[in-house]
Amino acid sequence: MRILIAEDDMVSRKFLNKFLSQYGECDLVVDGLEAIDAYMMSLKDDEPYELVCLDIMMPKVDGVKVLKAIKDLENQKGVSVNGGAKIIMTTALSEAQFVQKAFQYGCDAYASKPIDIEKLEQVLDKLGFKKIK
Picture 1 (cartoon, rainbow, N blue to C red):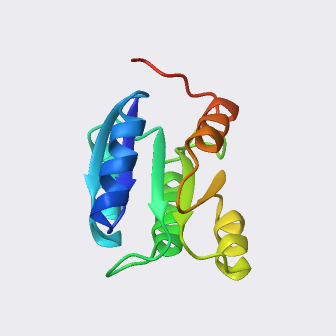
Picture 2 (cartoon, rainbow, N blue to C red; picture 1 turned 90 degrees about the vertical axis):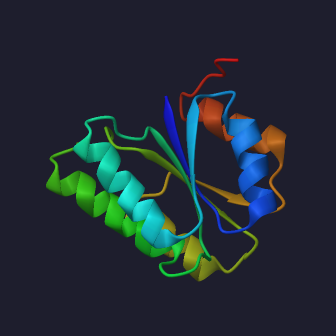
Picture 3 (cartoon, rainbow, N blue to C red; picture 1 turned 60 degrees about the horizontal axis):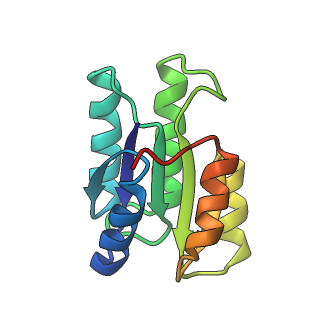
């Protein structure tokens, strides 16, 4: 499974990479533009990401806009609503408006920081992802 981690904080990025590498191959990006570029390349190469972890507050383009761009790209490619990448939004923010907007645009789950590993494992299990290592 291919996983994209979009996180501007180095500690959070390393933590997610170490944890999620148990589930598949992780690619790391540090801002919203890199996330959109990486997702576009994955579609172009016909090796789309199955899971995307997006920080809501990132430089250049925030995570909610990245989420919308990903869903728009999938729509343009004819990817079914349930056939696209599963998206987990991560943030230290607890502002309901960001969370609501993310769910309106099609995110599958939300994880607040600091990330609770047990809760994240439950979310991944619910989304159908299993550890490979």
